Image (cartoon, rainbow, N blue to C red):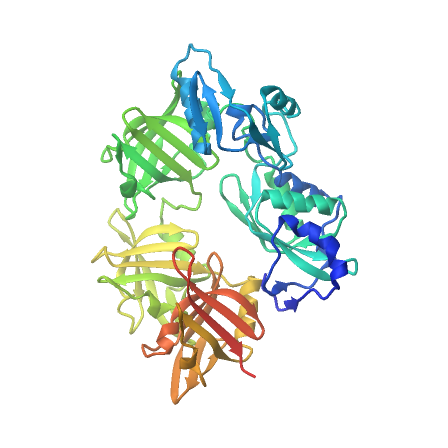
Length: 595
């Protein structure tokens, strides 16, 4: 985490003292770059026999329930690929999706005696992440007997996971940091915590850390106390599905009805009559109401109303959907699988729907909800397409602020451009956002609200639905990382130490230029007889970013108009990168503080 107390620390211990520590690093890669860490805080050190270390250990144990249809044991898993013989048919299981093939064979005939044989040798993975070669069924049965029975309480926590990578600071006996260890998966975490619990060394987790619940919800925790509370609250909050069926098809009508109504559901995959219509229906959202009404929101914001009902038969649970103007969805669907945050529907003839739960989706949009939502924090323009031309780069570093009295302010070069906004009902279709800002014709359109989600608003112009705008929320209050970045960049003047565009080093274009960041959001560059002024903004968006806009179309500073990802920041150096959609580095910009 970025913090004003960050220090660059390097190991200065003699090699003899480091030798015992190398054994700890055999299963993890060391950090080769300069390490950024916080000052040691003894209160955050993990205690060997504490409740928190036990919870972390349990959360990092291997969950073996996914392949119970093969091994009937939730405390171990069979390494894939594995060959099995199901009712006389030999198949190779090389992914978790293939577990469905086994269940489909089992379900083909109701009167047959289902049998599954494993072709040995195989490798099993225990809950402690040990790999063991098994040569026959008797050896496997020995390990299976050590597991708890179906749906019995066990030690592993399956309802919450760490979002990797995470890192730990490791201390010597004088409580000095000697290294920072990156952990990439449950196996590494389990083994690391095992050594902590054995009192082999002192360590603390580097916050913030993101935890992921079983339904996909993410929770950011900032200290040990929050982490312990979050794990304890979540550990029993889901069905661990420790039975010996694949998936989770042992639900009742009441449970299914409750599950459908808990949150809106977004279409992830759609097939009808063997035709893949996913492109046409992806991101459609369904909201199941208690009174049997289902509302569907299309991508363009249109709301369609239908009815829904469920029943449980010998064929399993069925979900019936009926829409007057949406024939593709109007069918009685078989609910063939429920996973955490996901429902899969099918019907004979090549019909299939996969829906994912998204509690952030707002289908019933109201004027009050839009207005209250706009007044939360600041908003960045991340998309602005007018008449086929993308204009969003003109608004880098220039956030909006919407106020209660219908006043809107746009921060440009440190000055607040004031205007008004209004929210109007548009027939029965929805609501329109009007923005009136002098000198900003691209914003002064009647924007139809098509999507309202936490952190995101999507708009389309009524006059031309091809004109689109997207706003993303920016809340800086209480974000220590953003506060630190703001403090660093405004603390002095900067120079371009490196600018690489692909294989071209273009640093010399910025020699003798001085760059400055004002606290009010103004950005300037002076040198070579030129003066450029513009806007800047540091913000978080699945990472930390620094938006630079020097307010010119002239080179060389027009090339730096971009939302740069912050790779590293210290009081004297800022490293920025421009990444492609595939994560490849396209450009590098390094700023160093002027002496």
